[in-house]
Structures are given as structure tokens and as C-alpha cells.
Image (cartoon, rainbow, N blue to C red; front, side, top):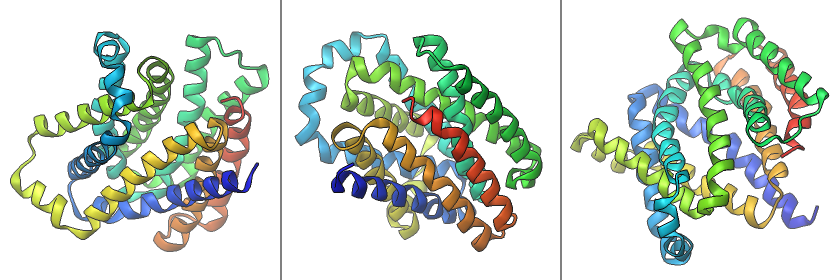
Length: 286
């Protein structure tokens, strides 16, 4: 790896570590739906800022985008992203560790689905890894920090795994046909429309634009999303982006153990490292 690639990977790691803690105050002090609103607002703002420079990628493919059945995959991702951020914030309010740990199980599920749909040829060892993730996920709900979640919270934790896997499959389907920017525009605008349809009040917009913690979290989310996508296209192989993203999870869990008393450092480190070790064969496959 070159120095710029290592630096890009470390930036991704840092972004993924910071993000859940910036969203924590919003999870604790505001309705979960509001997190979907302010995230959507700043994602659309990011599209508006980047469109003069990247919009030609979308405009040139616009006829193909709207006529493609994969356009509806992008739209569905945007609709479900609204739901995902809402339930992730409900989980994050009580267990920041659970709000990030789900990503390992989502990785395993998406690898299994991608193998069935695209015939990616998982090895027997990788299939065993996926089965182990199922066991690890159940153990985390019984012995890890997810055990503190209510029954409703555990259902949301499982739903996050399913949605996270769908997002990976949706990217796999839509980006080759629509282009990465067309996929982003379609998804983020669909998410914004859902927010409007759900009923955004003037008071909500005022909070989104005036509450410092919401503004900072929203801008950070949008900037980090665009940087990760830019890095995966121009700087790093997708497998390395995925690796640095997963490396952030044990770090978040350790910080959460120290700051929010989420289990013990030993418990968090054990689950984080076990998941990371199991993830490596699947990450390197991407």
C-alpha cells in the first residue's frame, strides 16, 4: 500500500469511530425520526454542492437511470435508509456497541445473498464463517451488550442486520448500471421525499438547522459518506475500505465500555476481535 492509501484508510477508520458518538446526543435527546430528517437534509445538501462537479455523470445516464429497473433498487434503498437510521438511533440510545456491531452480521448475510444471486463462489471455509457469525450474533444478544436491549430493541438489532445486508446487495446491483453518483442521487433524494411524506414540521426544520449537535452530526455523516465512496473508487480497493470500516467497530466498543459502561472492556474486546477475525475472509473476498 502507498502512503496515500494508508492515510486514506486511517481517515476512514477515524470517521467510522467518531460517527456513532456524534449521533449519540441526538439519540438521547431527540426523537429517532429527527435523526433521519437531519441526515437526509445534509445528504441532499451534499448532492447540491457536488452536482456542479459530478452531475454530468448523472445527466449523461439519466435516460438509462429512469428506464432501468435498478433505479427502483436505488429508490428502495433510500426509503429503507430512512427507516434504518431511525431504528439505529433507537438502538444507539441504549447501546452504542450494538449500533455498530450489527455490521459484522450484515456483512456475513450480504456475502451469503451475493453468493446466491451472483454466484460469487464462497469457499466452504467462508460458509463456515457465515454460520459462525450467526452463532456470534446470538451470543452477543445473550452475553454481549445487546442483552441490555428491550425485546423491541433486539428486534431492531436484527432488522438492522437485514437492512445492512440489503444495502450491500443494492449497491452491488445498482452501481454497475446507474453509476455510483446516479445511485447516490436516486437513494438520497428518495430518502428526503420519505422524510417530507412522513410529515416534517417547521419546528423539526428549525431544530435541524439550529441545534449545533444535529448540524455537526449531519454534516459529518454526509462528508464521511462521500469521502468513503470517493476513496473506494479512486484510492483504495473495496476490500480495504471494508476492512478499515470493520476495524473501527472494536474501537467504538472499547470506547463505549469506558465512557458509557457498556459491559466490561474484556467482554467488548472479546466480541469485537472475534467478529473481526471471522470477517477477514469475507472482507478480502470483496
